[in-house]
Image 1 (cartoon, rainbow, N blue to C red):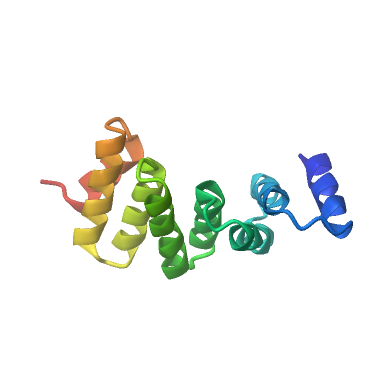
Image 2: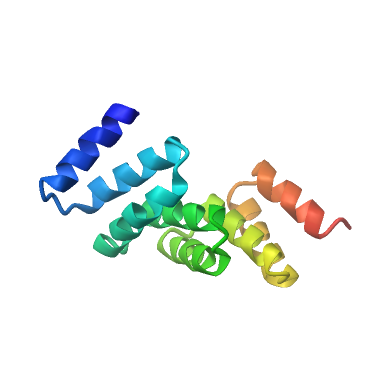
Length: 133
């Protein structure tokens, strides 16, 4: 993975302005457990390709991991608009809403994740925590 990181950084230094390249470098940095360093690369990937749902999702995950829940939530919602079948985006939006103490929206998002993927264990567990009844 370190070699891939070096290769992507070299390509960027050579002047390649490509959304996929920024996305790949960002995901490599996440895998190297450097999400804070990944943020600007994933942000640039989203700026270069606003319709890339997966880049937005990974950007949202990094934002959430850094405690930027409002920003993360906006990315997760954008992903659900680009790809209404992205169960993980609905799940993560639900978790973000739960942290914001918006129980109703949290349950709505978790229900959508479960509708898309009935065996989504994380969404099922989160829903039980929020609504034990």
